Amino acid sequence: HGDYSIQQLIYNEGKSATVIDFETAKKMPIVWEIVRSYSYVDKNAEGGKIDIDNLIQYFKEVSKYVELNEYDLKFAPHIYLMQLIGSTFGYREYNKDCSQKDLLKFALFRTNLCRSLYANLDKISESLLENVPHRQMILEER
Image (tube, rainbow, N blue to C red; front, side, top):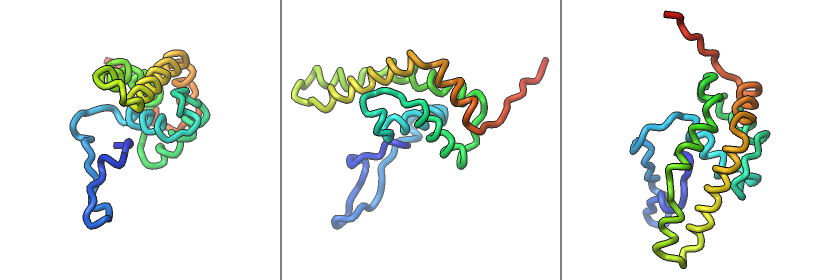
C-alpha cells in the first residue's frame, strides 16, 4: 500500500518470492495513500517538508490511473494530517529503547510533515484542485 520495505519481502532461495502487505487491515481514502506514498518517495520531502509542485506532479501521474474527484483533492492534506496527528509511532518506541535512533528520526520526520501540512492546508488543497484532473461532484438538491 505504498510503503514497501525490506521487512515486507519474503525470500526463497535468495530471490524475492512475495510481498506481505496489510492494505486491507484498515480502510482509508485513496488520497491518504497518495499523499503518504508521495511523502516517502520525494527526495525534497525527506525532512518532512511538502514540496507542493512535486506533490501536484505526483497526483497528476496517479490521476492517469485512478479517478479522483474534487473532494479527494480538497481534503487530501487534511486526511493525511489527521492520520499523522493520531499516531505516536516512533516516539513511543524510541522512549522504550533510546538506542533506536532511526525511530526518533522517523518520528521527527512525521512531526515535520504535520507542521508542513498544517501550515499549507489551504494552499495544498487549492493547488491540487487547480492543477490535477478530477471529476466534478454535483450535489443533488433535496
